[in-house]
Image (tube, rainbow, N blue to C red; front, top):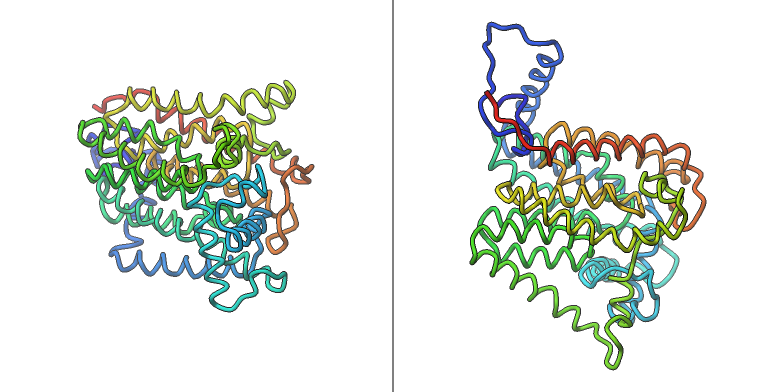
Length: 431
């Protein structure tokens, strides 16, 4: 494999670009080739990868057990307590718009709190809050492990096994995953992993499994629906695949919604619909370029884009996926998620975890650029909000890190923009 070839085929056509060994190479290219050879030697067998992932998992468990996370973790403790005592549907009516997660996300976190109670922890008291914060973040760790597994399987089908093992290990050890995905305390890693598993199922010609996995992802967080056009286009390559995919998606996504239905209440007034599908994100002072630009035009412009952004993203993702329908499903999904993050009119640090896994399907340099800039941005934000032991409260507040994180925020956004431009530009044919 040439060092110029992308890891997922999205930044080249896979042609052989080997050079005459007699010709001298530029110093940077020679350094890159040496680095890639070292990477390929880092995990010579699957046992080395398993041991490395096990070691990073132990380190992540230590992180979860020694931190409280952001305010999302403490909010999830409250949600899970309510679901344990009154059932998962009660929160939508009693808590209101802040209870904005679908059923599977709520059930995953509630199950973690039920495990804590079974192990003897006082779930309904304030005696052991750090332990409860540990348990409610376990679904995110599950998503991290599932995502690493899916990443390896997808890359192993396109790359030498040594390179695929190294890239899977790089994801497992990423500070961005540890901070925005695990420390933060939300379910983003879980829904992204399920979406990527859906893409894997399609590429393995398992359309029904793909539809069910996408339904599960959307039942964790409705942001996963941005991947529906891309996966539907990928499934359409064979008519029976499209039918199986869509039927499985509807079968596993619609009935749980019906279970939350309140008799005699109009659709738009249903508590579940208002909380989950009516949620437009929290307007905060966290630096993210779309927010900064919209703030210049006032709140009305911001509210207007918040309503329009999901439709713009889905329409664009559907059109691009159709034009590039010959590309792998995982690449189509990665571009869709990257676009949703690029245009996000609201921002939370956990949003950075959306692309931590899919970006590997858009090229090695892309993955490196995004993980470095986004990890720096996340670290600065969390560190300036009281360190990593105290809860990081930021929603609806003036943030002390606004100036500190402004430049890393723009760097992350520009890296994301360049990744998207490179992904959607027509690919030149090699010599």
